[in-house]
Image 1 (cartoon, each protein chain N blue to C red):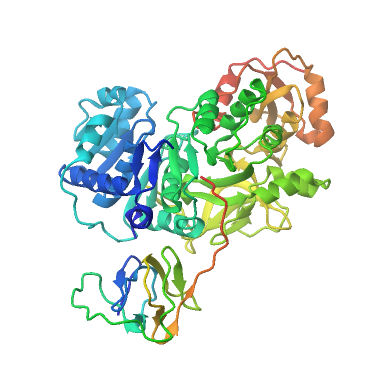
Image 2: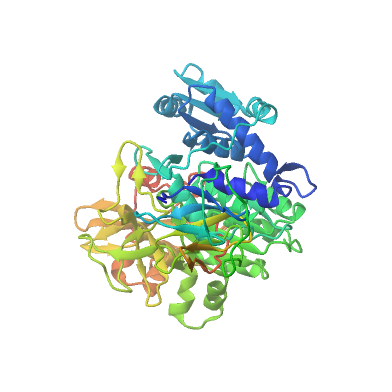
Length: 102
Length: 505
């Protein structure tokens, strides 16, 4: 699937929804709960459950990245599946909390 | 990417919390703000407006119009509601076709400007309270314009800085933790809507889930009263505000704002005596100094609470002086100091502050971008980084005094002057001189009842700096000219001085 910054995706197997904050130029196999993610308007979602090993869940407001940080997804709705590219799971982008400045 | 993402997330995760309003529950929740913004978007779309202006003090109409504009895909343009009729008509024609949410005097002033429809606050809010809610159909193109902010224009004609959704969303995602605020937290916003910190405060607070308490017209007494009444936990002030708050608290012994956990200041140079007094008056409050520009979507570097305490407790001058620094750059930004050719300078050497990162716009409407090919923004602010990467800001490059070929930062002289217990305010200005190119004129405001001989002032500065940085002339005034957000108007000061007879002394 081809992504752009601002693209929205939803999980086919759980409640997870994300927005791409950063996306690589090439096609990319983004999954949640082990199943390819889909356009949020797609109503023909079969349902099902996250695959074993891809069922750690997502947290709202967290950003998920691949090791090279070419892909960054913002979780806008949490769910039971884990995000990944193919079989490789994404990780939470750790950020040091900053003091409120404005 | 769209600012509406932030409000949508807030509404879906903690929609019942009070977004804007009082702790007694009056105000609007995140869900109500979301829905009202949708109806505002509908109202904007039903017109032929291409921009949404805002010419009023802070109220619930401000976030509604901001997020409504984002939803409708139209740039939001907060303007200074204290401009003269002529100035506002000129800006109004520049941004037409537009709708402007305006106070009554601004509405009257805009009467007759072609394709500019001014609507009063209450009439606007009526449009947002009832009616069909549009689909969540805002655009997600990160390059759409979110906000146009006319830079304060302390020199020359104002220009509109262009902040796109990508800049603001990057800033918020990079610096604010989603729902990071406890539900007892409240922030007191007293900067006006047309200041970048006012816009950033709305976005940050919505994403953090921190209740916003608005103080539409700042004065120190109401700031203190509101902070106490609303159990305010966070606040941001510009230096002149903090200075007045300090004076106010000194007049009211025994009064303290116990709820205040974090006080952030920025938007101009903070005199060290003011911050030192404030640290003593608020012993349990965390202080945060933020440095940023309109063109960088607000904050780019932060001096945190720990840095403040370390500096205050240290006996070593290199650490103590960090109290006057802007702290360290945000982690997702790069800052470097350059010479006039753009070459990177080493730690401790003053030059121009350059910054690069996703929140940095550096673009002006109709004037293109000021970014270099590789994305750096030369800020036009002078400064240096110390050995550990603390950023010291020395003021606008244009304000640097060149005396006999030596570059002198006015900030350094001002700081030296302000260390005098009887000098309440000070500015150093370069004035043309046939022998030196420029000479240093110190303009000072004395504490009530003080009278210091000019020579004593000169010696006082000379003892701290060196003779070439000693003011050539010292002029005493009753007040220095500031704009309403606390920026010293050096241009005005210079004009005032040119008519002033500077006596030898």
